[in-house]
Length: 243
Image 1 (cartoon, helix red, strand yellow):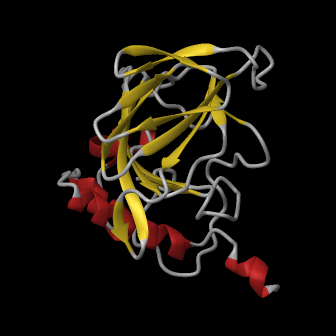
Image 2 (image 1 turned 180 degrees about the vertical axis):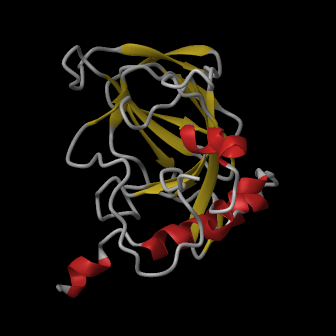
């Protein structure tokens, strides 16, 4: 196997170390996590299905992905879903979701929009978040039209591809059909091994990462195949066992 190609695969070791770093960032900013954020794989195998079904069925918990890019440093995401609903299950009528996101300098998801989800992105602590926005046209392509966006309750005129800087405490609302990317601003954030990390929060309507995302460009595999180069230290939100 080509060694260069092998080093670019999305490996379990990347997931393990990314969650370790995320926990350090979250702790640094004084945020407490639910107990199941620390559960090991062997603990999940012993839980009672009826007691913890919501965690599995609503895909709560750790979520680490490179979107199939093989370039996790630049195209990737580390987040933890705290709460969510599921429109396909009557047992989960919540109409809202909340996620914690770890934003290293420069790392972002591929440009994408949501068919139905409306989300607020809130810069909580650390450095700044840069958010790039463009309206999608009726065919799902970038539109040249001007549009408005709500930043901390204020209406802001926006040009296609324009960038809004969110300092800690600031937020903006991204409506459905708005192409977006956001990332930690270079040169800002809490430093770990020379990389700045910012903590942000997403508050939204119900999140359906299986069917509501429309990715632009070459990458968009929401849950890529993982190379098991070391044992799992955590289970991701799409890996919970049937118990």
